[in-house]
Image (cartoon, rainbow, N blue to C red):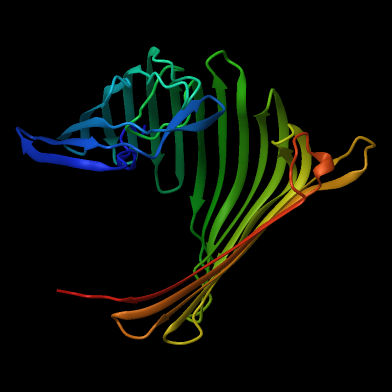
Length: 381
């Protein structure tokens, strides 16, 4: 659980860090005076939002860890005290990793938070100075042998849990997910073959379904540094106030055939999909093309072409296209010497929509071109 994410410290005025080891315990303590700015994540069970942080705070982070052979026992504590009476957020709890064998790893963590939100309803509706508390915990077991591998994880985050010095965008959720696979290594064109399945079941605190997923498939390594994966996805996901089914075929193909064609890959999905904007089922495809080409000793070209579309039935039952979204990007890098290189990037992003199929008002077409050029010379002492 990411209880610490240092990018939440947006404008440090001063800070200090102490790191050491005593009696077999490694520790780190960080104290920072943050002037504020940036955004704070406002988590929920099926989505998150942001609020502007236009006030300063003092941030305290401490971490301790005791190794016991290949296993360890640890603890973490964070405290963010906002200035001018704008509340606080305090998080603490233990974590561990246990290795009962060379094939098994068990990890777990339990955190508790105590929070008073800022009294700033002008920045966020839920910032009313309210006091809340909550827990966050997870337990995972991984098994990895020569042929058989499997994993399972249970995760539970209560509605009142907050980690303002970390990155936890989803709370009020209980999740069980896992999977497994069997690997064998033939000789010839295929060098590794693995059949697998993954399952995931996620509910909110009241037991309402957020998502249910079942994904069987197989993957393989091939000659030319190749990787191929084919999978079937049978999902049911909450969209708005109702859950909608989605069944798709997914694929990934990636090869590095030669020095000049360093990487060529294509991945995507096809089948039924979900129109989350309007909470309706649909049908669509996603395809992503990538290539890394080196025509000569000095020039490298990276090309990206991504496209997604979604179709659905209108009021008369006719099949119509809701939207088409595209991303096209070209990045070229020319290396003159070990110290000097030039780089140029050009990217175009566009979306075409049918406004008559949307509940809210949308534009029929939007597009954006961006580009950059860089000339860099590396200085070494």
